[in-house]
Image 1 (cartoon, rainbow, N blue to C red):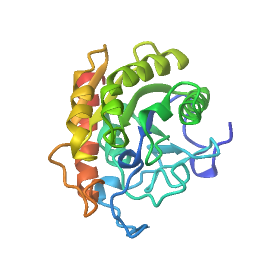
Image 2 (cartoon, rainbow, N blue to C red):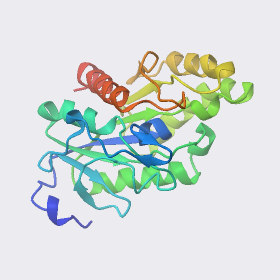
Image 3 (cartoon, rainbow, N blue to C red):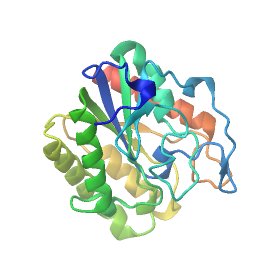
Length: 245
């Protein structure tokens, strides 16, 4: 595994690995308007090359900085997401935080099933991260807006999400891998509440849910604003530190 010059001095076995997965709100659209990111980086999202790493699209570690998903969700404009504020909030407790961005905008949960490209790529990236030294600590999951467009998709969300959890734990050989999922705050209003209820009703060990309702949405009424992403990152950090750290 190649290590970029900026991170070569990092201890190989000291990384605490977090998988970031789901769709656009995890990939980050904070500060994106008219398909361009405004490049504003809040203090809570600041880089820290000595403590915050990301696995890039070429499976190499580098200093983490916004936008985390630029080379992963590469067909869309990426901005601020919850990953950097999360990492900055937990680094004092966990040490070197190694982020594995995997989210892709506009994707439904059926596209994340075992055997599908998105799922297999996520598992491949997570395994590559672990192989370089360190331990996978949790998967942060924010997805579901694309499943609010039909009754069928909303009704099948819970079983699909539970299967995803079982599969990723099995394939990563982490049977108790912590999963922190976000209950969505946007999508087709007709079925959004059904998906939210499915997300909040998952009752599996080491699975917790944080609720995005109340966080500010941008003008498109779909994507969290930059400040809302910072808030979400802190909510995810609190969930991790309170339940799993």
